[in-house]
Image (tube, rainbow, N blue to C red; front, side, top):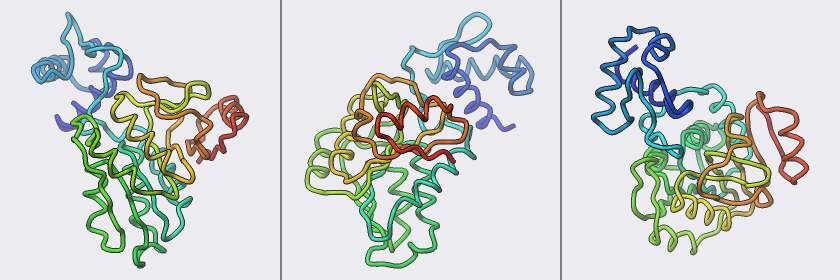
Length: 259
């Protein structure tokens, strides 16, 4: 395992658990304890974690792992979810995509759809995510609209009043949300309030709203609320979702697709 891959895995484990011991991490990644100690020291120098005696902890309970450090954990689930979400989009529609690893996979799934290779345009994609715009800009059959705003380093998403101004002037057929958590009571949520505000605007401008989230994010809450479940038409998740969770979402009026 390369150092880059090891650091990504360490940081994601740390965000998931809140605290990691050296020996625990060494066992998880099948490397020596000395290697993990060096990794922890170097990541602490970059302020990616807080070093403790015998291990490391995250900076706080609401710590958000930067997108560039996120690994392909749950990669197969995210790819299945993305393919299913992409199939909900009709040729010629205007689609809003928020930032995140799952929505990035949705963008890639749309890019390879055979029936979206031609058109004027084949699809209009509105996004506040710089990485998604960058990936799709090479597709001449897609019309790419970037919201504008100030780039947020954690997620590559554009936020602020400049983005508000663009979104207030458009309408969308569908908005696809990547979320940190989606709960029947508290709704869809993100870590950052400015990011959540832009995502909320995308929802308000859309005819229908799709949440793309793997099952680990369901029933979870996060600091900044995007929207309530009443604004969400469809949840696309993986087959590990509990039957009780599906039932509760469906009772709240959300269609659930488990793929």
